[in-house]
Length: 587
Image (cartoon, rainbow, N blue to C red):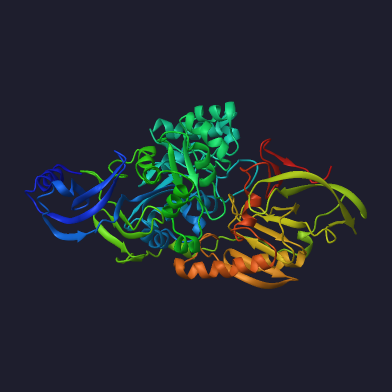
């Protein structure tokens, strides 16, 4: 804010200059004092000039007077950790979906698209979002690939490249440092990357699944100061007591807020608690909500409503050192949400920088979508394959043999472990046709770097029939296919290559479902309303095939998430996450 603007705000505050807009008779949620009281809010240009209790206000000068009629007035919501790519929407279409839900600021980590398109992917997200009427801040991905030497992605970021990208517009710091093993063991690569951000005085976002005690302390000492991977709420007190920001998550597949609140509600107003969505599908955003839904869940779990609002506004702004947002106070940006009540948290109006953006769940402004060259690039590079490429060769011709298998612990969670099982060998190949709990999995490198295809067996994936393949596959976003027959995997590969990415299902070699993601193999060019229907149709197909997850389209991608315990899969083979090594399939 320049000197002239400050002078004008002073005049508005004193009643010597007319405000542009006055929000009258609102029940103000004051995140500084923890109070709720009737107040009038004076907006001038992008800023709040004054906030006055209704019984003290004798001025009420404004060009545009909006009577809030006692409804609750909150600062605009801030999502402390999100991957826009997980919605499969472009940043513009993402803004169109979440603004009516009251989210006026997001801190996004574009590491999904960076793992496919490198620096070009990061700049695409920034360019596509530059004119949206909200704050879309970004973090530079720290782990591209997630763990060097354990997978091949479409790019590789080192500390030199990251240092350059930290100077891009709207960059707040370093994205989630997923290689927690590298940080704790002080690997040269991760130490240099984290130090690059710290030297610039920028934020370092963490990722600490299952870390407790000494290992957690070591990770924090290594530089990261936040974590959205608190899947078990019993781990939240240790993190909060040690000063780490707990970004409590409520995504489409990982719902952790209730467990976290249950385990910290004895604490008195922790300032390092925030709420985030991480990965949320369009239908959930449109029908259930965005950060307003996180607030709703937190309050239902026992968090005081003012504390829940604070966790999505002031706490998050202070976490990222964002100046003059996160509260309704003089000199702050006029990012404001009007709520119907403090139980459902339905959003009636959304203001961003003083302008009414959305009303009654609908946008009231036009948001233009730029056309960028990268949107027309086919990022799926796969050579000519045959059915034999999807068969696991056995060391013996026929009989029983021990094999390492990936095993899901539950139908919902993404945690997988490794176990040894006896399976059949038939005609020189692994045969699992008699075990309904097993499926084949293939990771096919699609990044024009090599022709790697890794094959394994997965237990409790619950794919009763057919096959499913996806190019949205955390974090390398290689082509992940779960299947029962080789002809299904081959048909899926051919169709996904033709589409330029997406999710495809097959049965007996015939295509049964298609969900295109033409932009980087992970984003659709469709608005949320259309994409939500397309995803719903694919989820219905997958549920009929046996996948009962809350987000069936996301289930295959969790196989390749090699930074989540305990065993996963990459284009190099089975991975032991904690030991950070490739596992031989056969004993």
